[in-house]
Length: 483
Image (cartoon, rainbow, N blue to C red; front, side, top):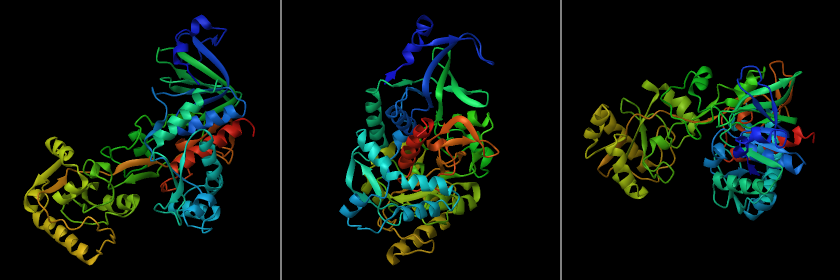
């Protein structure tokens, strides 16, 4: 793989060798440097890299356009877990034959509240194991056993050896670097799609040097530009629950570029109102928190508990937090939780910065956020009684952190639910071809990864993001190559 941005700087000299030059297209100024290849991929994240490698395996010359200075996108910060029905590893984990692709499909449709496209879910689940084997073929190693995640009927979550999406990206990048058919341009955002005689034939991109590039793909263009949770205006256009105060998770460069470029050509967007939210997010947890709910409780601005802290994130947000005054929460815990997490120094720094507050009494703690002290005292007392009983009125079942009874006590500042994952995007068919408003194929245009809508439905099950980018990255490459 040639990290080819430096080539652009000498494009004028090499015009006719590596590149050919053309006049400026409508809307641009100055000369345009043309690059000819077989497949153009917009986006160098997980789906884009998988698609590039798969297309090369099928004999294509590939150009990848990445708008940032690094590859990986949101996959870089994913957990690296991969859901697939895998009889060999499942038998090794003592599961025998209790799983099936059909059960996997039902799980995904159910947790997505049946708002996913069943055909795309079928493709995801049936091709998950071949996708995992593809990752293994390019150097990604997985553990020999599988694990259970929330929403799955049986254990089918595979952990790669570092439980890291960044590890997966490193292996894909290493493999692609050795492939002379793949050329990557970083710091080169695509700005528009080129359509001729009704067919998408390339991409216009802007180089870091200010020059315009016209990258032509004789086979077609694959959009792998990620989601849109970095575009608050776009999210708020479709989802009235989202506030400007909702912090985003992940790569802020995921601003919906691909779906907006395709929409400009008449592409249909689906499920754009569906955004996965996280109520008890990293913003609501103390620094260096080691997972689980511990003895953390959630209260509203009136000092009242109102939700099970171990409930699914979207339920916490849409069914409970958004029914509270102001649409925000506070989280409360005690010194016992701090000691258990080993986060004292980091928490001290955040207290100094005003994000968290500490007090020796519950009454003082309530005063820090102007909550009624008697309500906060009652919330803590009721929680402590629930710890002893092993149940509470909200349905919480995890009380492993014990009672809140060891001063000093801690409370967060205002916490708004976190934008975790955008679930809408481009409408595609079973070949990943992008569809227009009438449901017809836009010739030459394909999409893979989070830019595609209706794969997950209203909620993305854990361990399915990596499977999704792998399965549909491969499928897009196969389709663009006529396989």
